[in-house]
Length: 511
Image 1 (tube, rainbow, N blue to C red):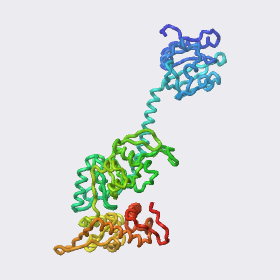
Image 2: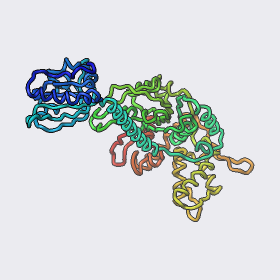
Image 3: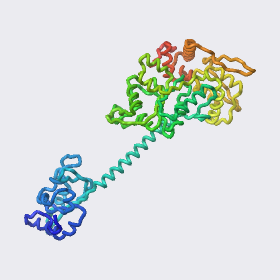
Image 4: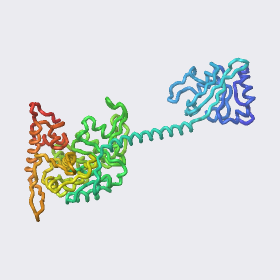
């Protein structure tokens, strides 16, 4: 279209077209200069004129539009491609009801089949009181809509991160930090010094660590020490207690799930691996992971990839894994209950924690530290541990290890009078052999063969069961008496082949 050529219009010559012709002639300069697209339609929906901006935006020339049904060419479909019937068209509604129609966020279709987002106003045109058509002014708002979409996506991302932070905080609230002289680990024994050297050695790396040892020896504390001393220390340490997760929820707990992935999945859920992205995942009691899930765990460890339950999208994570178990995983492999390839993948850097009875020199240090913590928690004021109290503590076998010592000390703080604690030790743990050197008391653990140790542990469980009338779980049960997790005690009972019956002759359900 040249600067001097008239704007194209339907030349039928009737009154309606004469009216549009006047509009066109009287507004030539405005129509040519306008940045918005402008076109007219008559009462039959036929295009009467088109300005240059409309031609540029639509890709149609005026010759191709004038005299043709504008809706059928430009406005025929919704954004999703579904038909947009002309009787629903707000553009045509203007010359049917005589009202101005302003519409945001619809699309017009170009000649090449592409589309763009528009806002438009359809204004009815009257001539001598007769409604003869409408003039439509539209603008391309694609860039504005794209900016709005980016802003919406940014808000969604902020909302996602906020929800993730809330979930991280919920998990972090479960974590127990014990203050101490070195990463919260208390002790001066050779065994503890060896553990600290291992922590310092492996922490700066991303190597997978497998921490083994009896229940209550402080495996989670060592995992925390490794995480805190690593380059991931500013990110969360997420804990997954594999012994406490129902078998049918393992995959969801680890990898998350999509909404409606299974009955009860009311919303999308972020799994522990995703929560730990950039940080560390502590898999406590890893030996309790079902065999059928171990292959998926191996894949995440090897490739850093997984899918949420109910999704096909593959997600990537950067997670360091620290695993722990009181079980002999090599024995579990031999029995076919644990994958050998997963064992080797977890056991890159093994850390074995010795039981408290094998590092009795640390018991007084631990007791004093725990007593300070208990006094602060109970607001009792300073509490004192006598030499006789320390001697009694070092002579006890501590089948529940540090966890049992912590409970004994807290109980002693509760029973304290006038700053003096009262050590109340159970009688089923058994004393350690003692001797004297240079007038001082030495606590020495009895040297036991593996068979003797197993027999002692079996007798210890039998004594606890007898004292509790055969009750394993719950208040007053053997697990509470021994100060071990119910799942741990159930596992040991099965290992030793102990048949448990309650005083009411009902069998205990251990699985």
